[in-house]
Length: 82
Image (cartoon, rainbow, N blue to C red; front, side, top):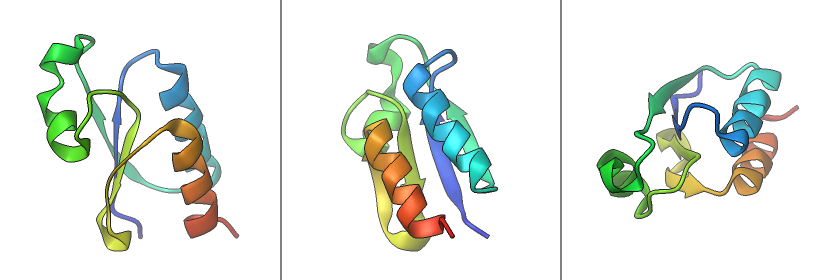
């Protein structure tokens, strides 16, 4: 089973888009809620080098911190889709 982690923000439409794709593909993931303030998002910055969300981590496939919801959705479809 996938060992995915998603850094997200409550109410973020881009994060919701990624979560919908994760659910469609039946993938389990660990959610990390980030603070609303970009200045306080140290954890996601350490992972991805930036403070925006969503950010996906997939250590099984060498993904250390993929940003951009469209890129994440495409990656999930290509990697875990049928």
